[in-house]
Length: 259
Image 1: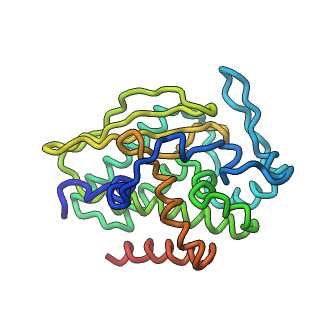
Image 2: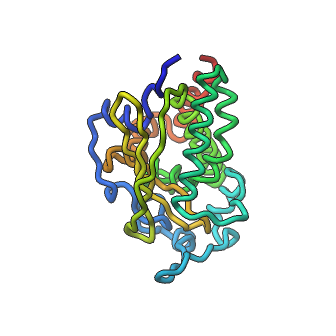
């Protein structure tokens, strides 16, 4: 078993693909996940009402057919509202726990089950899933959207369970929180690894659903996880559509479970 996590997925993919993307190049508007101008009143309906210096109000999902199709894809928002830094501290704590568990021999599937709740509570899966396929999102019907969000969420959980597979004294350090565009905030984090370089991870967060949730991750301050996913998925969508993408991503998840 490795003494440190093999490589965090968003970092290894970035190196392999040679991409350097600025944070603003991939994020877009949380109210418009497809990254394009709304094509209908339905698309406009999801834009949250935001007042300066006030936590954005929660938009009712009942007025948006797309949101209704997605509401069962992830667990309900927790009752207690959590700030950006607190949400990341909670995530980091669970990641340290599964790393220690892996070092003691806890299997991948158990780690998956342990990290799943905090990942689904911390990440805005519908937004990230939509952004990861860009304008193709608008082509999906409600059932396809729901199934893709579920698959994307499972893959995100799988990444954490698979990559955080050992412990040798690593620690997470939150360096601060800063405001960003479109009513978002960025929590700057370091994964300190004894005897190796620290990994810089910045979590961009939005309160569009009520609680602060992650909408993108940047390694080394500039490489966007969502942009990398979109680049990877575009060719699959061209060849096999959303069904081909769901099948390909599901196969990756299943393969990890058997290793």
